[in-house]
Length: 372
Image 1 (cartoon, rainbow, N blue to C red):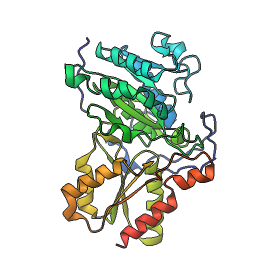
Image 2 (tube, rainbow, N blue to C red; image 1 turned 120 degrees about the vertical axis):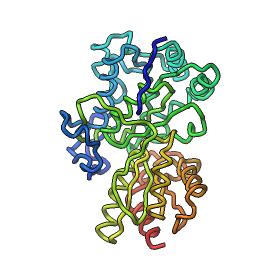
Image 3 (cartoon, rainbow, N blue to C red; image 1 turned 90 degrees about the vertical axis):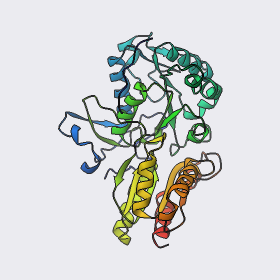
């Protein structure tokens, strides 16, 4: 087995229906980049490319395959077809069929094969066509991949890409946010990028990590957001959150697509009510950046936890328990949570809109919390 060196590790959303379809062939408008205050300073003078969220993921995969011959891809229709969302378009022609492997329609077999490859020194990256289908590989991930290091002291450097989330009118079988299923499984890391910059940097970190990593990528964001991303090699460290907007009146903890909802709501509250909301993008769900969470609670005193996953059993409950146990004395009001309704994801657009967290719900919750 190869010896692996350790390493340390206001945009605007388009409205639903503006240039997006289920398989990602719609057009996206240019969206302003992340404010300078949120960008990592050492890369500001590097050559930059304007990338969509999807392009950033694709670029990270390509660069890591060029950098390390142990990295290879496997999944359904990722080769000749280029993937369900075209993330791996052109990879087969460049890297060949030994490193871009079209698999049978068996998620359990795919993850099992990746786990075996990882423990003998390869770095497989698995694509689930939709995050929902990872349930078919649950036993392989939970019983095998997550426990091998604990049982045998072997690294398991593999990534499972999970195209997740709603707002695409995909219905109950193509819109899952499955992070809650795996948060109770020691041995798995979970990342959830909200921006192209983080999508690229977190993918690179996930591939280089010696543990199995579940990489949540949000279909709704694929072609809806763009920003400048460094051409130079860089990583976003796992386990580190990011303050996307500063504010001292209250804090919103969130990740993935609801980061953008929170930022939009914070702008509304600042303009209409003079309430300054801090928005913290968790970026990594396992491990959590507990230091950033607790320091933000101490500095603001009021907390809203926002995620697209259904409310019951979501990570919001775990964060609320963490705050209650370690920072209760700093709270000036009860912790609030917003998630999707506890139902399957509806197919009808109007019902899906009511099911998901939306701007009006978030604004109303923040406004009520600020007055508590």
